[in-house]
Length: 320
Image (tube, rainbow, N blue to C red; front, side, top):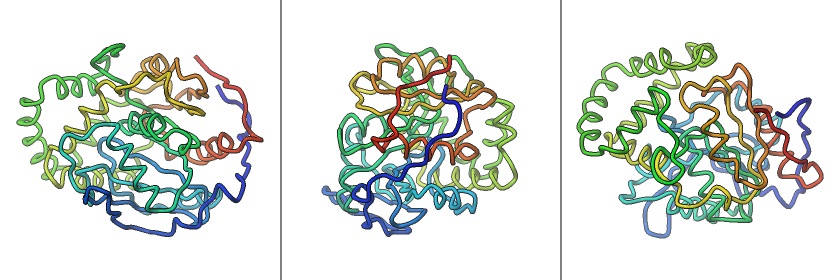
């Protein structure tokens, strides 16, 4: 486990692009689809692409987040995956096809290199981007990442929320009918889903669910289901299915951060699945659950910066 202060070293100026100035935009892709993207933080900051979880879509402005980005000198880009928010659907999409979408987004924004951070269900997409785009991805961060529940090396559905996800993946037709009913219920009472997360989650996660955070999550849930259940089901199918490549083939540096008390994706699942990544730097957080990113954002941003800068490179230090 990492200990002490994370160094905060600015990367060479050549690594930071001034091309990233958008606040919110839809970017055209080569096949004619549009990908929605929002940006926060200083326009000349280190470009970091954050890939949302299964219910996290449109970001809300938050003074705490914006101050953390300003302090770290990081420009945060938040694309919405196909079918979510303002991004056009992409039937039959894969982890690889989304990595290609992200490469096209980076081309449109003039980004030669960038870091990628995947949260929860966004973790497999982040790993796929690093695998597909190679040296363009300077650093990959997997935060509370989901792991495959089917295919070679699949993890067991060891928590109630993973069991629900596994049923969704294995029985798509039944899941679609159930999801339509769930979407209707969520639209009527979006706080009910947050209540489920609260009851099934770790004590640390319940502590993070402040009234402001609950309001933001409610808005994110409503945004995620605005187009119906199909995009969410497709997203879960990919996030909980086989990655299509070995974790050993993901180039580093890869930062793996996971809460020891995660009641959604057990820490052992994440550590086992990422164990073959050669250049990984694992941080296990005692007392944290699944939803720790906002509270740990300054430390995560500092770790991304340190991993990007060659003068700050260091061997992995792990906690069991």
